[in-house]
Image 1 (cartoon, rainbow, N blue to C red):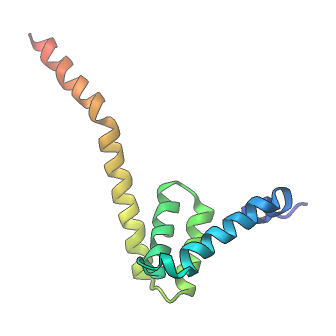
Image 2 (spheres, rainbow, N blue to C red; image 1 turned 90 degrees about the vertical axis):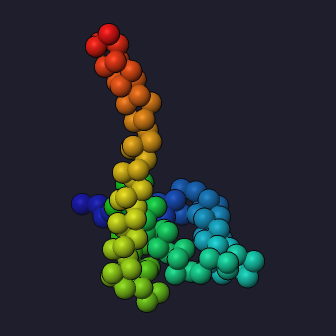
Length: 112
């Protein structure tokens, strides 16, 4: 029976340089003085929302755990998830706009 490894553990095993790069990028975003215009609290909530919108259950949970560790509330995390949900809906509307336009035009042609 094999245990399930976390994705970053697997990356560290097979491509340690890329894993190190990702760790350094996260540090750059969260710790470097030049990148503090957006507070870590909001960056973490963005992480929760983006992971959810991209459909990664594991990453969504990881970012939510990090948010809790940073002192964010369940309400704040839930609100970030609802923003992601809303934005995902909006992208479907935008993606479907061309098709809906075509349907509208084809309905007009059928009635002519």
